[in-house]
Image 1 (cartoon, rainbow, N blue to C red):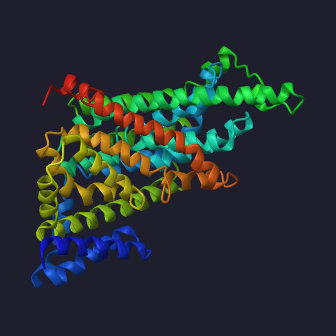
Image 2 (tube, helix red, strand yellow; image 1 turned 180 degrees about the horizontal axis):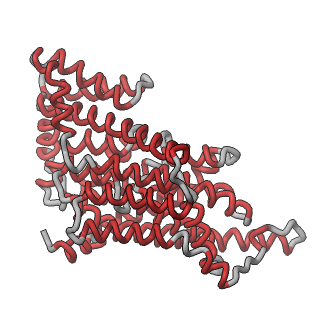
Length: 449
């Protein structure tokens, strides 16, 4: 059997098994094991556990469960609601300030938690009811939280970037720094749209009221005294200090990524104990239980994805696919467009973790051959995978929003996130035209590569 035929069979069997409803980790493991049995030496089956262990024996991967613990500690506490309330209190006078407050709260929470679903859940549970109470349309309220939650895999610390750094053999610190500029870009684009949409809905509400209709909550004016504003800060500032401290420890060379993750997790738990009184075993149980479940699920997917990639490499499927792509002699930007389109299609069905580990052996060699900076590409790929979190049919963040606000029709949620998908496409184009948005900060701090 030719390598091309074998590769096509490998991909087809993978799709069939995944569409059977089997969990992703088990699907990848079953396909990899089956192809080892039929197309590799019999002794290879005896090395499955050894291969998985060796592939996962990376000190960088150790940071994943620690960052998950940090995110769970913050996500399972009232920190998200307090953060949102503080930003809203200070920004309510700005047109569309409530929408901007949600974007900023999502960005800050994402930078502390590193998880898109956790960001959606923590900020959305407070933000969506408040926006709807103040007259924002359900679709817009859902869309801005779903889109803001995607910042969790772009702003450091990002579990997705940790995996990309391992797969692409790139500096994790440089990759984290490269995510800050594009993260800020998306925050600005989302906030700008929030202002535009809020003004549009305000004018519509005013027009209806002037014509004798019901007065919308949009038209109500809120007031917060300086004392109320100041009183919101003490519960939020410690977490901001935690975020800054973790970043200083990492980029100041005081700690490795894994040590930084452990430090952040311990400090987050300490802050919960001091600020919210969360220290008893019954209070910590949901946090630790959630961390164990998510870490186990994620590491199982990582392990099976790495085994899947190992089989692809052993059978020369990935090398042949990469060589075939190079042999097409596509222009640099056409190659990039084709690869990103493939990532978008995979995003219909797979989480970012699986996409990175399954595609890295195939797409990275042609990109390196074409002269692309793999740090820059990692950021572009992350933004594209963010789109997968908010577009059907999977759209993990969409279903998180449905869980938070079950009364909002799925159709409204999908249409609510659509403008943000377009803004992400714009961000990718800007990154292609101005790559220094991603590469400028790491080059300035860590020196040019």
